[in-house]
Length: 315
Image (tube, rainbow, N blue to C red; front, side, top):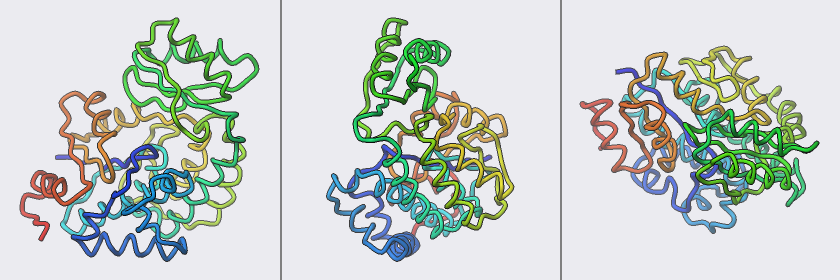
């Protein structure tokens, strides 16, 4: 069995995330305590109790998802479960790098907190937008974006799976692209309730600010291959890991290709580590017949360990 750990990104957050694991396992509690110390406020309370409106703020959401993922990771590791390769969706790439020992948790927490702030501040509120396009292949979406741009920005931001693409850019251009995609036969094309147009050229100011920060963060060579978002390529060196995080801010998330890459390199079992099962659903669509597991609470942990490490026990 070759195992890939995959880590969710923004959109998977919910009040209560990580609470059951933290209550049950000291490894998870330690992760939340470390994040609280780094940030100087109780991220753990925000994750466990809300309020939801505050959790949904990008600068809070990003460290919250990272920490919930690493809490689940630490519980898995303590019970002998290890990945052969890793990947993460957008923000989840930071979690993947922590899992691969390329990035320390404390450095990742500080970086994603600033990442969220920079991405939020890159485009004035209301000027950008994102939309989900369902039932239309990537080439047709890209053509619709070219037609809709009209000297504005609109492009594919997340290529999540077959017939599931998210576009981002200037609000008016995104609206034009939605109509063009509908005309081209999309089953559904709708604006998303997001606070900024992530993973497009409008994020260039955020990318520049984050690059300066990440230049000061110590990275190590990854202990296992990390399939990055920007290239859907397996990387190992410290410089490649850092560079991928910089470029992914304005580059599309090539998630379908990333999962296909994991499968080509031998992954047969995929474990979504952290809140929710969004990636689990995408993996099932991308790799037919793959074994897909997840860990977000003690019950799902028990089921996953029964497959990965039959001798392991959560007690």
